[in-house]
Length: 634
Image 1: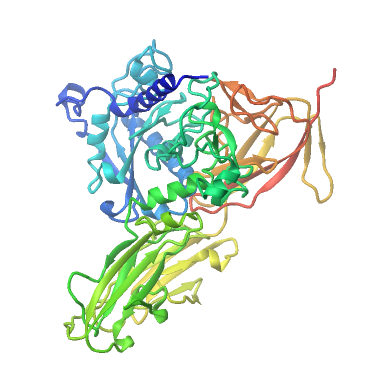
Image 2 (image 1 turned 45 degrees about the vertical axis):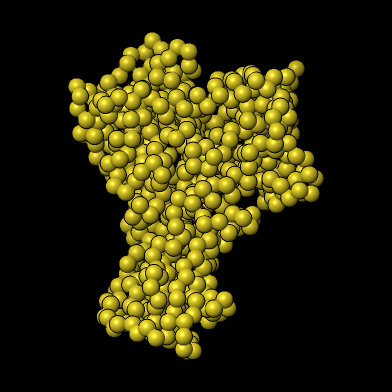
């Protein structure tokens, strides 16, 4: 058992470890200078990877690269694509992708690679961000701690107009296949390691959402002690029993008993915050415990609020500083989550305007207001099922309002406004079959608001109330490629999108079994008496990195990455799991994460499912096969 003073020291050390990648070298007037005093920004190029709107109105991910020479920049772009597509396969980033811009800052390094990779005796490299393993080549650190010069990183990120520390996340990728990374204000990861793309969402969970590690250890291979503090501030750690959570309506009581997104059931699992005993988390494994799994519902709710708090649900509206006349239209422009449209409600003098429910524009003339002044309010709310806490729902992250004074004595000046599209879902890449596609228009002060009509493959698609958003998921599209169009009624103004309704497919290849069993109408069964490998391969009719996932016996979906030591190698299943750097991978059946987890072989038949998530967000239907593990003879 650790004394409380020792515990504080351990947590302080943990904070220092995380901060190491943020601080880099001690800032100085020349900290942002490169080789020979040349500014680090001198040869940098900013590339928009995903542009969903003005940078000052979005959450911006700025990806930097280090140790990529000019000839290796295509590899950097491929690493960025892989990291981002893995992020988009993860909720809530998948549903709120339209709130996020992604920028890549290309900075060719004079030399390839980074410092002290893989060991302290490895050469130092001349690179832009001075990235290095071992906490920047510190013999007192650990190999996997990958740090950089934070002043140089900030200088490069500042090249993206409209971004600042308050609305961006810096992710720096090292040109390396060695496992490593770090988190804090900034995140680092090795670009080419099999597991590196899984580090990015985990670290953003820390820096954006304030989520804590659910590890039950601090030093790998050494079990943690017993937690001795009071009730943790962490939203996903507690000392309470399930009954106490229900009685007190505390922590994750609203989610108890549900199937966890990361596997198992939302409940109470001992271990977390670097301790093995005395503190509990909601799920057996999740993104904050084991890389490769999803955020569970508790973490997803926190992250939904965190992402939404970086933006304003109301992007623009009829000016409200002065009274408006009753002879005009009033409007709001909202954000447009990919996962579902926002709700808009109107109230006049405290009573709902039911005829305008969902509409983004309200024609005040149709209300026939009595003389005098009135109070008009538009409330924009995110109805996402990811959030159950009323306080989070009512917060400015998920609910915004605008209020106008309507004065019937005010007369609105007539002014012609051309009907045109002002913003819309990008047309440069295919959209997924379950996406919400949007098209915003100009707003005349008088007269009718431009109506948007939609068609799919030449056939009209009808909307109600809100004609700015179209939920493709509600149309249940047949597989294939479709053409979606939006037109401003009565004009030639038109937008067109390609809809990718065909998910990527995956195929598996297993090592040679003892025997194969085929039964009519049943999945193929493979019998082994020991270790076997599984390689998944994806095929898609569109370009881009396809995320593949698998799960065993209905546990949480786990991102396929090859094998921790080699992205091109197949995944290795063994009866007890394989220890790599004191973490355990590939135990068939009941999983193991650390050496002290139960290693008892799970003999018998297991169901292995696999699926894909393509760049457009389409989730392929799960397919499966059976594996029977029998004890070895003798």
